[in-house]
Amino acid sequence: MVSCRARPTLAPRAARARGHGRAVRIDLYQRPAPARYANMISVAGGPHERPRIADRAMVLQQGSKQFVTLGARGQQGILRLPRDAGAMVLFAHGAGSSHLSPRNNSVADVFAAQGIATLLFDLLTPEEAEDRANIFDIPLLAGRVTEAIAWVRHDPRLASLPLGLFGASTGAAAALVAAAETPGQVAAVVSRGGRPDLAGRRLRFVRAPTLLIVGARDHGVIELNQDAAMQLHCKHRLELVEGASHLFTEPGTLQRAADLAVGWFTAHLKTAVPG
Image 1 (cartoon, rainbow, N blue to C red):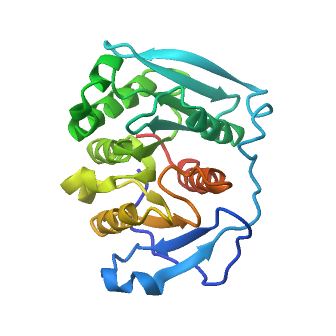
Image 2: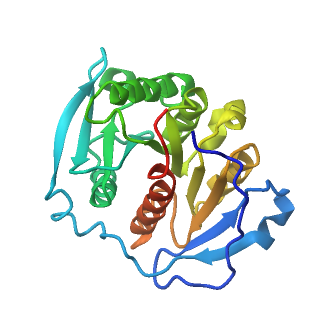
């Protein structure tokens, strides 16, 4: 299991990113009081070294993509398994999204290009999704993430791969609760535009290194992520992507979020040992 007691190294304050989608990093390893946030902001970024979202044709040249069905409820998903994959990431979507989302699939292609297998799957069946209360039923959603983890661990192609969770909106809370409940299985978590606050008291039990990515223009969600970060007792960081709103639809911002997520997973999954 990945240790959550690594000593923090604060980011340099010098601006390194250029153009759209720069990320403002807030290092929160030492759980500072909210009044100190302003003193811990620095600009993180740099030239894009990973394949861009637009360069999708080359991503799966040496791998496979297939539609899969999970569990007794028959939830649909898309599995990307690049040749010689070194890690595995489960995507937990939020409200209004699905395994067919072009934006989520574009991000998954970027992961695959870096040798990270991905599973995009629906947390709810179409019938369940019609009841809006289910979208905010975090125990229900977390249970579905846990079931997907078990599905991965029973697939001989995937069972030995270090596992990460990538959540958005309410799916981020579900991913964090699932990580807290399966500490030996999950080696890293990333939340993009997520609501980690909805994980409540389970946040303190998360042991996997956690990255919180929020659009710098998504002001209400920034505060919710700051509050949630204060409850995490593991290695964690909050990144603000400049120019991005909640859905990261602005030019360059989704690419920047994908780069940040890939960097986090690469750093923590490829050195992890599956539980």
